Amino acid sequence: MEGGLSRSNSFTDFASTSSFLGKKYVCRCSLDAVLRTSLTYQNMGRRFWGCLKFEVGKAGNACDFFHFLDGDEVIEGRARDLLL
Image 1 (cartoon, rainbow, N blue to C red):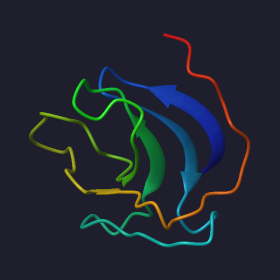
Image 2 (spheres, helix red, strand yellow; image 1 turned 180 degrees about the horizontal axis):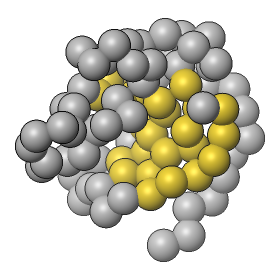
Image 3 (spheres, rainbow, N blue to C red; image 1 turned 120 degrees about the horizontal axis):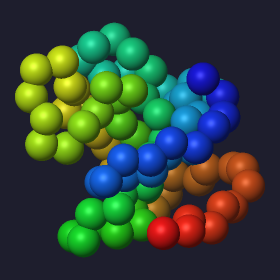
């Protein structure tokens, strides 16, 4: 998946895969992680790699894999404003 904006109550993502952006994160489900932005109070605006099945607080088929971006990771691309 190389584009498109999606949103849940706890995160939003510009669904770019990690392999598309030059760094590869693979979750326990063997899926490429996608770049997301947290919308939770504790981590508002913080970027992270998360599984396509990632859902905060969900059990069952949801995957809890995530990796916060560190300051030394550079992501190239267009900036987007998030309208709430």
